[in-house]
Length: 219
Image (cartoon, rainbow, N blue to C red; front, side, top):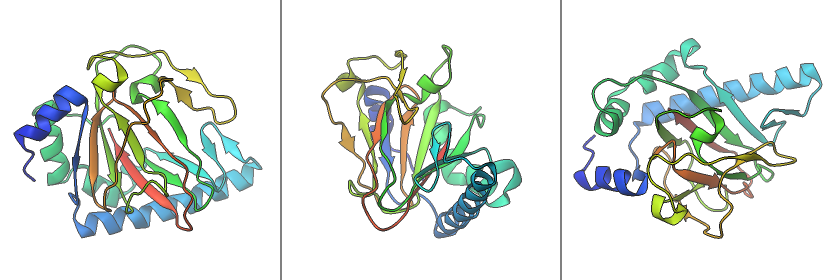
């Protein structure tokens, strides 16, 4: 996939850019199937423990299912695909390492919002910015809880600024932006990738539709 000069310039200046329909049909269907398999497994584990929340995971509401790539050839095939190589080379250079990967799932009609944060805000110490690739496994709309992004200028920051985050009561979300700007919604079709810095503020709304909202995050 050709990453344009304009997209890289936007990434440097604003902190993000969007690649519509960047994933192959095979990768999209494979990631969807693995997502369902892991959601089913995660729910069985929570049921066995008798819990309805586990960190920022909430039973049949919102799931963050992390680091399954080592055990899933389907996930690994996507992570080391040509499209991911093109994205990472264009933004980070030739030597790139996988840091983290996870599914982010919002259940139908009750998938909750996710507060304004920098991905770097969840690390717990200062570090160099890394890259987040948010892959839409469904058509993303305001109604089903797509992500919103805030440019560096809108957030009043530079590309290296790392803000203090506070834990939100009830959700355990970490919140780093408290301003009035609602951000820009990423209204993208399934198979699209929103590419942003770990310093870029983003959030997501609730899923009010009757279908599950699935995304996959590679960092």
